Image (tube, rainbow, N blue to C red):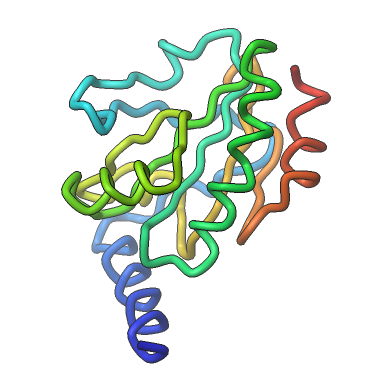
Length: 164
């Protein structure tokens, strides 16, 4: 089992790098790339159109990621505390089918939006090379922070509160 997780991380990096031309580096202060992904219930989510005037945390995760489970659970109370002030969390699952994602989310009791990046296109667009990673987007659609690796509720709250 301990060998499987590093292999999955390497496989993820290979799959996401693909053979596409290198895209421009995402930078703090640049506009967040637009995308359309289906939610777990099949309804399409259009970023940024549907989330205008919200602070959006775009999180990339998978159920095999050792830190994603604890981080997703830890961020739920922060989301509940700030959602009425305009916080949206878009938790983008990377390359897993709904049959895997649905029971995982149900077990965790997550109430924020779960999106499916079944082909990895948005994950590549956001230049994700390891999980978890979170982008914090302001109300105007500008990237204001990137959290690499597992985030604590305190770090996450610090990044979003100034934008709400």
